[in-house]
Length: 277
Image 1: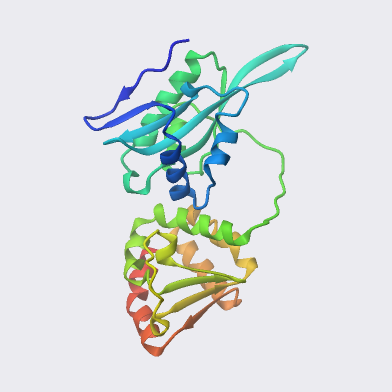
Image 2: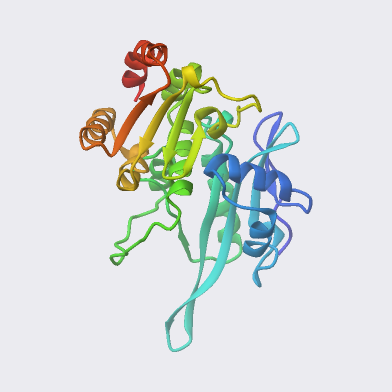
C-alpha cells in the first residue's frame, strides 16, 4: 500500500503520517497531555521497535511546523476459529495539546485514521474514550458501540504519578477552573506523602526562585483520596463539590496555610474556584 497522503485541514493545520525526526515533539506533547507519560526510549519501544510498526500507522496534527496532536494505529489479527481470523486495529495515545482543544481537531484526526485502517483491511477497530466526552459522542456518530468487558482489578503503585496525571488532565479539560486558579498557581501546593509540587510546576510555569512561605496554601492528601480525585473529570459540578466536601469532612484532604494572609487570599478566590469546579 502507498503511504497515506497528508490531509490539509486549514491554511496552517495539517494531519499527516509520522516522519523520522518527529519523536522529540511527540514525546513532549504526550508528557504535556498526560503528565510524565515517559521518555523517547518508551516511545521507541512502543512504536519503532514494535514488530508490526509502520510509519504510516502513526499520525500527527501539525500547526505552523509544531506537532499539536498524535494518535496511532496498532494492527493485530483476532483468531476466530480453526485458523480463521479477523484483522483488527486499536487506537492508542490520542493527544491534542491543551491550547488547541475544543476545535474538533481530534475528530478530524479520528476520521483520517479510520479511513487508513479500512484501507489496510481492518475489519474491527477498538477505542477507549471517556464516557460522554466530545470524542465519545463523535465516535458514536461514526458507528462505535459499547461492548461489555470482564471485571478487572487494579492496584495503584505510584500514587503521586496518578495524582499529577489526574490533576493535569482535569485542569486541561476544565479551562474555567484553570483560569480561576491561575492567580494562585505560585502559592498553591499539593502534598501526598513525601511528594510535594506546586500548581505552577504542574502547569509548567514554575521558576527557580524559592516560594514565599507566607503565601503558601498547601493541600495535603491521603492515599485514599486518589481514586476520587482522578475521577473528577467525569463528574458533574454538583458531584465534584459534594466529593470535595466529603474528602474534607473525612480529613482525607486537608488545607494548611502559611499565614492568615494566605487564608484570606484563598477565601477571596474561593467563590470563583468553587463555581468553576
